[in-house]
Amino acid sequence: MTTQIPEQAPPTTRPRRKRRKSPWWSLPLAVITLAILAYMLEAYVPPDIRTSRADMHGDNVRYALLLGHILFGAIATVTGLLQLWAGLRNRFPRVHRWTGRVYFYAGIFPSMILAVPVSIMSESGVSNVAALDAMLVMWAITGVAGLRAARSRRFADHRIWMIRNYSVTLAILASRPWGLIMTLLVTAQADGPAYEGNSVAIIHDIASSGAWTALLVNVVLAEIYVQRKYMGRGRKLAPAGAGR
Image (cartoon, rainbow, N blue to C red; front, side, top):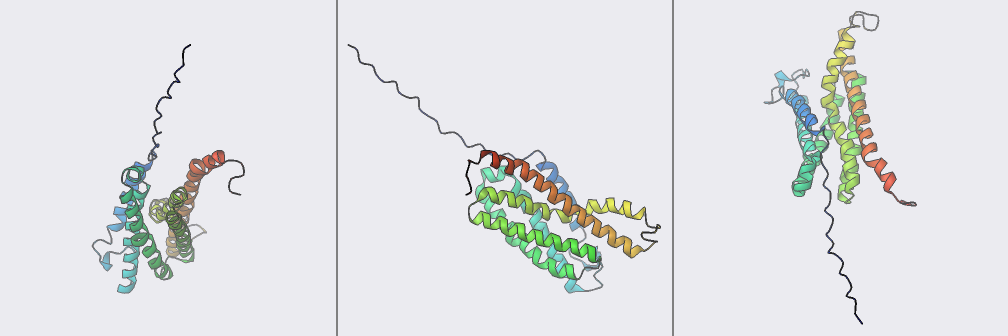
């Protein structure tokens, strides 16, 4: 009579967690963003009221508010790129967390606060002010939602809200190239019945249409990306009755 020796199960290896990779468009986005940012900062670094692109009428207080809004916004722009960099998040999570804190507390939040008086004192017309205020509200809502998600350790939600928030952060930069396109469209009608050569109306329309278009395009593209990459996958993987 022979006894059978039970076969030993092969040792199981713990599956390695798949690291997220940055999408292919991350590098072009970073290059274009930094190029536009450098162009915008050229008139304000070093600070000189005489080189401001907006006429300050010699008002140093107004210039200081605008300068602070721009510089804090620049910090948000750079640290936001680092936040979206998957390689930094995977390899150096501590650095990722600290850049996130800088993004919120030395970037979007102080820039938002200073944006309120800057918007009130704007001379670019009601439509442009409305676009700036819409950006401000969306910036605040998505920023607070992203910060709360991170503090609650809901990191998937945090990532989604950060994509939405950063799309608003980039809207003010995107308004510059859109402004060039709107300049061509509006000036082509400068002597027509829409403007009849009114230079003030032309300038206001260029500014407001550029701002609204930048905000709309950025938010829509960000939401399409979120829905395709995160929401659709979540609906497929969620078990029946989840979330009840």
